[in-house]
Length: 143
Image 1 (tube, rainbow, N blue to C red):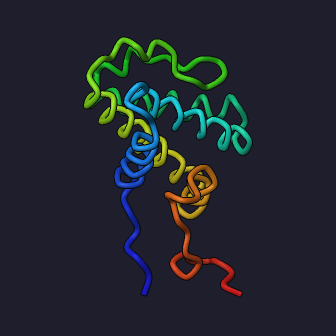
Image 2: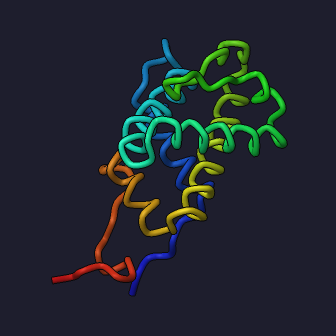
């Protein structure tokens, strides 16, 4: 019997919580967010190209900004990293906003390439956090 598939929000919160737990208090949620989107940039740019990753991230930020208006001030630089992210000083706002951006990015990827490949891409960035059990994935070669 396979495990229930987590929601995109659950995946995003799991990734963010893990990165936040790995950071010292010195860097906090901002540092976790920077690490998350830097890892994604490396993994997704290799597959989508730098401009493809930047376009998807820009769209995810735009979609998440409807629930978190402070995200409107966030800009994505040419290399795909956040700029002007320092204007937010409330840790809970950063956590919730970045989880929302990551969830929207995951949803966009699922729309473009499907759930299976999206989770595999997340697994490549966070292999100890996003686990893949071959028995739980349709189309997996179990042999």
